[in-house]
Length: 174
Image (cartoon, rainbow, N blue to C red; front, side):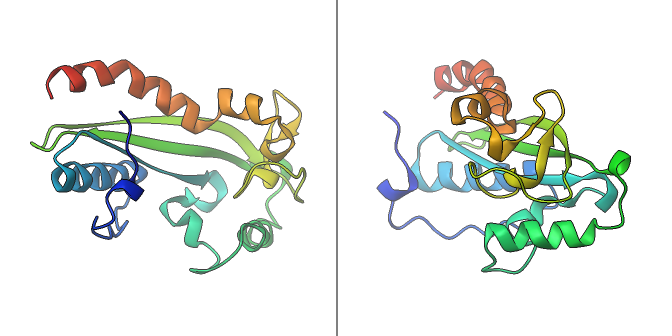
């Protein structure tokens, strides 16, 4: 049976202060596993742009300020990259997923999806940076993909495939 954080109203707030997606995912999964006494899975994800030395990275959701909208985050990114030419706009979406047991055993896997940053938003689907993240092999931004397509090739989908491979080991030792 799968439960969500809504099933545990007293769960403590977890500050995502890690330097990497893996650190944040591992911290969340470990704290939740200890708190609930159950196996826990947590993730952290975001956008890493080569020309910004991996930024916005773990600050992806807070990139344009704590309460910024997706549109404001995309706009800030486009302004910061305005002088970056087409051949230098490589980026990747990264997702780290962690599985943890209450006793401390934990493992983190990562998935990524590579593309580049557009010069203007395109598409109405998705969320976050999807309108400015272009996938050359599809000729579309993430926001232009059908949800089924995105769910097959996204960084989350790739991390989840890796997690599925290690999950039986965790379930058998719990």
